[in-house]
Image (tube, rainbow, N blue to C red; front, side, top):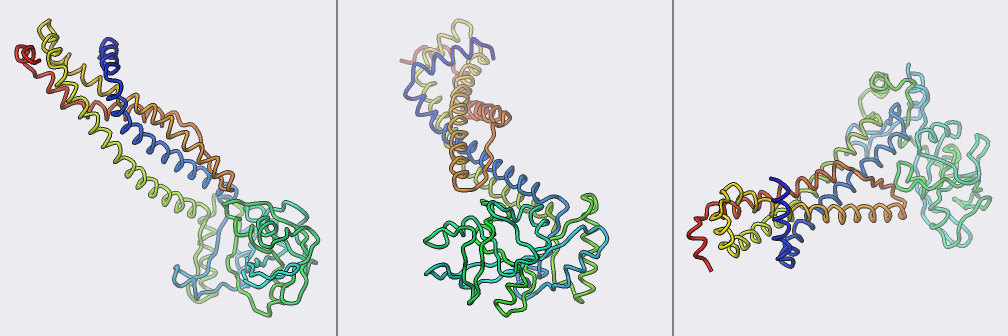
Length: 396
């Protein structure tokens, strides 16, 4: 394959512009779909990795129940927090409590999610990226009837926007808003966006219920000892509960699970998009077969003046490969543009979708499209190369 072959192939394609354009569409759609899906999938992967970086690889999450079904009935204990903090290698631990109550603001009443926290351990929640103050201040241990509210809660929950120092009504008690959290978008702190954050002791006092931890977050002193700390916590809680009615997950485990699920979804979508590449390949094969039939006399003349079977084969293979290459480039540009637009739309919706240029994806797309084109054009090219010069020259 030399430059002369590419030049000749390009000239032949120019003679059939409309047919070549229709043939390109299949490759453009196929490559564009694959590039868009891979770029968006990579963007989600990077976003997930970034969120877990915020949480920290030394974070452990303790959940009730040894399985999804048992978590409905299993409960953690408040004493578990002290038990965990007493374990060697644990820097700090804090619980989260959940409750759903009717909350009033001005003349409106609506159901709201309340998150009870230990106000002395807010620093840990900030460190792992769950709770971050945007306006106002944090809660203190003396804040019995003061609350934080999520950014979305303040703006969208009621007809009127809730501002600092205004009051909410919960079961006859007035709660003063002292802080509004930063918008967490779709990160791990997203639940706080639409919730009221309150001292868990105050929440128990108002609701009259004995709450149990929904989750317990712990932080290991050393990142390298997270696995050992996890086993120590497991051993201690199993001893205290008399059974293993809980789960302990590290941030790395959750990250691996999330990435594997995203990877599986991405593979399925790319496979579905790849079907259009097969259709595009069939289109190239059909076009090249028609080209061979139309140019039978031309092939005969080339053979009569000394062109070998290899030269004829190479000419038609390069033609089909050039179709794939052009379609691959246009498809990449369209696919990456779709991914960029999707990233901008996601960002405006609060979803952190990172779309970045990947040179390997560009070169891989072009190489793959060129290869698809050559494979699709092999049968027509071989048919052309095996023609007998005399028979070819007789064709009109």
